[in-house]
Length: 207
Image (tube, rainbow, N blue to C red):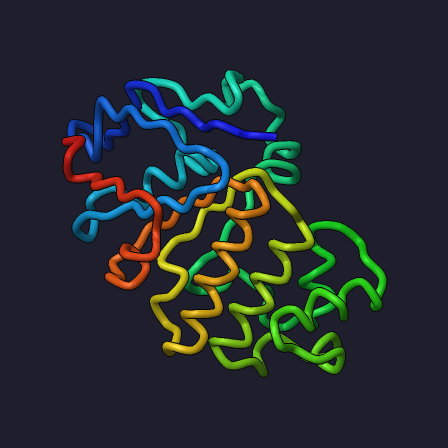
């Protein structure tokens, strides 16, 4: 199924300061979109509006012609939105197994199979997150996204703390998600990520 996410006349302000306004854009499944612009320019704020971590001040966000604000929030997080953060958003003092099962319960065989896709062995299931390197933690976060299987993936500077090898793995994974029919939106300062994306959206154009 082809999905469309439309932001219509979207604006966000804090007090009298507009982070962005009159933003109109159509995001489609099968593509990777890079949100670009200066630090503090609104990239993360736009992700948070789409992810419903904050409310837009103006406009609407429509997923397949349905206003996302009409979708029950827990259903939205469970079925539609998946996040990939620079800081991984994993629970440090829990095991990998516990972190992967936050989204939905799976057996060890299923979890092992997904970990192998990201070059992590079954032994990792019983390790605590705080014992992982940055690259390993990001691969666990990617495995969790695979298990969740959301419609939209929002990635906030996902390569910012990674070496070239792990950055390439993240990009290949994002491409795989897009090829599977997901909408992938990435906030980034990384020129490599920008050139890898199918389309670039410069938030500075919507001031």
